[in-house]
Image (tube, rainbow, N blue to C red; front, top):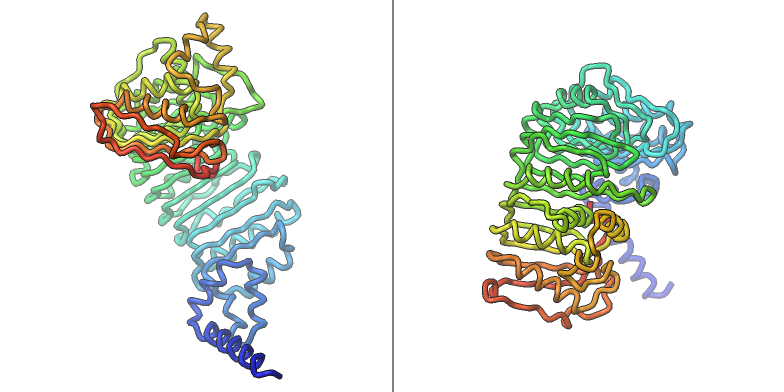
Length: 449
């Protein structure tokens, strides 16, 4: 063997020994970042590694890939006294008889963050009674399919739970009320595509501060929101009724309307009434984000001459494509926001209502389309944006703001056919000291809602 080869072998052995000499806690933390099957194979490296994986603080079992037998074997060797997080994913109906045993095993290890993903499981599943009684839960993420019903027949006791996320399940007002009663210190609540909910009454959730709701046409979700204690609200609403009854403590809100492409009907009159009522309820909120569809509906209201409430917003984000259909709504928002200090525009196209439906509505109301969009020379959609379009958009926003300190415009680089440096940023005497930042970046849908 050459001296060079022997030297290489010594370096490799030294490196392995160095890793093996690390404390178990560090080794287990490292193993949490690889698939469980690969983590288990590290036991073959040496005696030192034989039982290291058995006490990793986080365990993720994907039963769409693993067999039920391998999951059972893994759990039988798992000995961690306390589990930080446990993620169980299965879409196979034949594994349903095993699920309760797997959940019980996770709970026996005092799991803090439990995630159950049965999104595509076509076999009806009911969470067991023992699941509703745990003093170890700090965070729960439950993703079911629409005909899975959450109906706790026993008392719910999740007394240390702070974060709860429920997705794709059938959940009545009474069932949610029972769950919330058992979560006295709950701070974060997410409801995604939860059907049967009508009145979301959070008056008794005194510690709840953040509420996120996502609903679409097929899953109506809550029609009334009573949440006097929350500080942050994120709502992606369908084209169905939703009323803010009480959101008096809000300091931050993010609102948009979900457009369902399979249903082209635009309920324009109804949507205008709904979004304007929402504005009335959040007019004292200092940090607001509006999505493109929400702003387009505001544009229709502005064109029709409907009055807008004055806003006390100081930080405003416009998460929308730059196009002619949002300009009237943006103009009115800025004119009615005299205290605005920071303005951010995220230019991207996400699930937007087609402009042709807005045009059809305005025509049906007797409006001349040539005058409806008179305030801008922008095209129908921002995929063909030019540097002149961006400059015009920035000018429009500066023109309607008086106290602005900073403006940030993030442009989706996938749609840009020009260099940012080519944009000529206009100035006005009343806000010549505004810090205007233009930036091109890849804005992903996952960052949206």
